[in-house]
Length: 297
Image 1: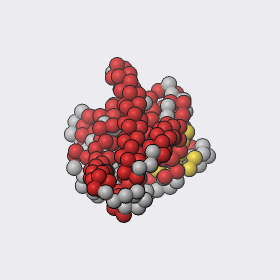
Image 2 (image 1 turned 90 degrees about the horizontal axis):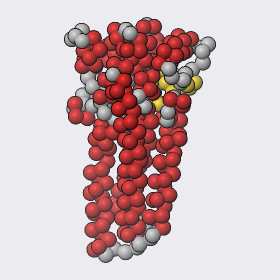
Image 3 (image 1 turned 120 degrees about the horizontal axis):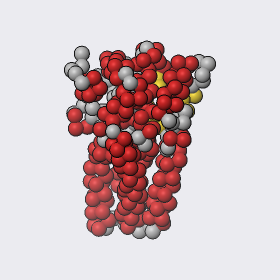
Image 4 (image 1 turned 180 degrees about the vertical axis):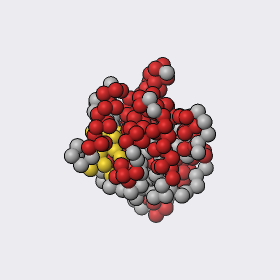
């Protein structure tokens, strides 16, 4: 089992660097095509500086960006005593530093982990989760999130949020620019063809963002985190019970976003049918079967 953990950690490290390199190449490619079209080399320079800046931002500040998106607030020991004590006990057992704890004021039960490494890990839960689960179920959820931290899932998962978000913004900007023809230096056929090619490429790119997330954030990470949590708590029924309650809740997360859906322990969109190909999480029934070794009921 430990070999799987170390292998998974190494995979996440190179996947993170590959993702950042891909973003760098993609943005520079955008800048190069646009600079040709507008006959302005400074656009390419801007693209290089922008891609470097965004990679640095995604590495150092992606966790803060995600927390701000959901208006998460620090969880104090006085207000959330059970959350604190459960996390402290499990972090000691797992040999991990105590992560920063945050809470989202939302009735939908859910949780996620973020941060760039074990020393800067963050576990964030909703108030709906805390009110719905008993202590053993809460232990299962926290153990799952700590497993993401221990397995080094968190940096890769959070970097995806920032980079994909900015790719989408860049795509929208370039598409609008091509549509309205603003700032073009000329209207020759060559320029028109370049804009047409760029518009088609960006139109294809945006829907593929979801696929990029699926490839970068494999669904097997959820199974591995589940199994790690079961080993950590020595009580797989706790996490299984939590997954049942979370999936049964009809309340969607108020600020749910497709860019951040893969971070959560369970799909934050409720009542929406999604093709298995584009699911950010394996079906809850399969996860429970893997935990308990029997059919979910």
